[in-house]
Length: 150
Image (cartoon, rainbow, N blue to C red; front, side, top):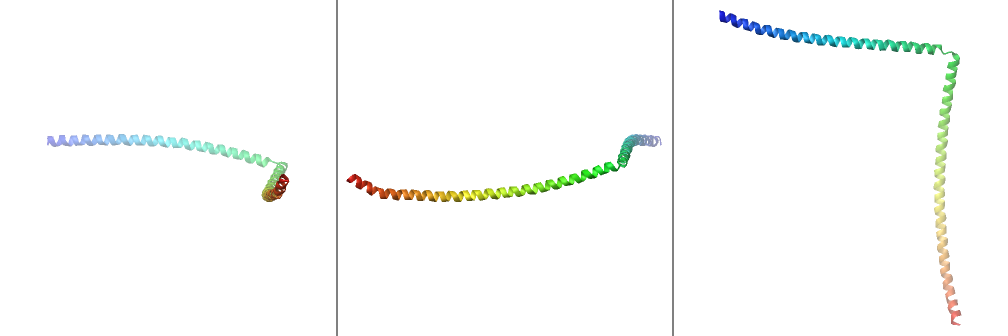
């Protein structure tokens, strides 16, 4: 019976130590979760403060916008029209530039073609001149020989 009691007491002590360890781990987890909750609450407060600041800024912007009188709105309208006019002018200028560049390219191609044709004509004329000079030399050669012979 004494042995049985000692054995039961040791088992009880082991179980008690296991329970204490589990309790310490549970306390540690609770502390960690509590810290996480505090951090989340701080983050929530920061977000709420930023949200409120943005609301204040938005209200200020709305007040400034609603405070604009008809003159300001008219000026904005005139500026918008002017911007549209300038954009249209830019598009028109770009189209005209494209047309000019196309005409320039076409003119350059035509000039190059004409230049090549003129080179060919000059080349043929040059060949014709050489041919005529050669014939002239053939015609003169007998005359020169006969003059030298006399």
